[in-house]
Length: 223
Image 1 (cartoon, rainbow, N blue to C red):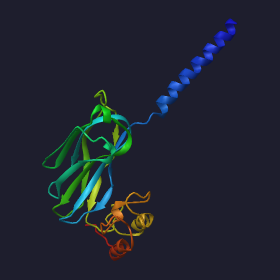
Image 2 (cartoon, rainbow, N blue to C red):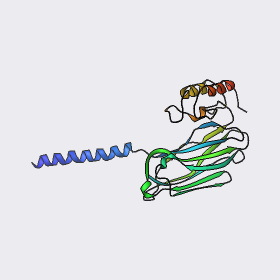
Image 3 (tube, rainbow, N blue to C red):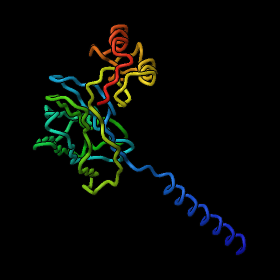
């Protein structure tokens, strides 16, 4: 009887250790991304950048800084993303200084969120020519106990004046055609929707966009 009890205890201990190890191995670290990675914005026009969080648990607050070249871009506005709906935010405070914008936000305890989605949308206006990047500066995520959430963050996003250059290589070629083809006949909300391919800004990727793309096919915008 004692041997059976000892054997059962050893098996139980093994499964507890295995389960704990599995949890640590398969735990997902939250990540921040800027989307879309590339977009075409002409002088005088505006472009929007989504700050997206992925696989976060109990997000209550954030303090995020974006850096940009203020000789080429001008900060226009910032808005809470759809991640916070319904419920909204208690605090949302964007402050722009020179070539950076800092956005501080917090939700009520009842509106703590988990999952993935757009937490902030930031709009910039192009005021001069040139390819330019918008990049993360400091980032701080907080849970419902206001404890720091360990996370990673992706790379920069680019604003180009090269119409039809969807992959950011400053050339309009077969690679861009493939990206456009994937999004063709899509509208906002479709699985294959890609806003950078909506060249006429009507909320869909259709024949007009194809015509604009065709006019710029084989353009080389490299300096």
